[in-house]
Image 1: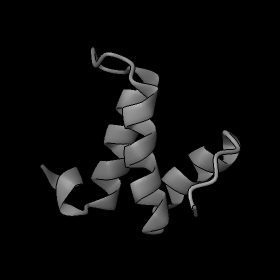
Image 2 (image 1 turned 180 degrees about the horizontal axis):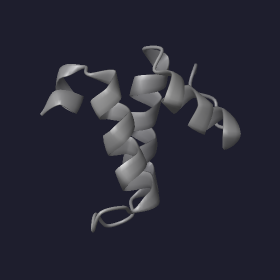
Image 3 (image 1 turned 90 degrees about the horizontal axis):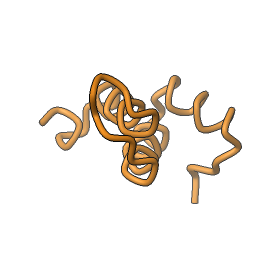
Length: 60
């Protein structure tokens, strides 16, 4: 899967799907945050913006 191979856009998309429970995927905030943080750490701007809006630190 692209998200597991370091693709930050895929990590963001998968994180968003899990975090918000979109497209029939069961909501799993913990799993979603883990993908969002991976993407944000690697500089993915949408992931950083989403986590900043939620006031979640991804640099730790």
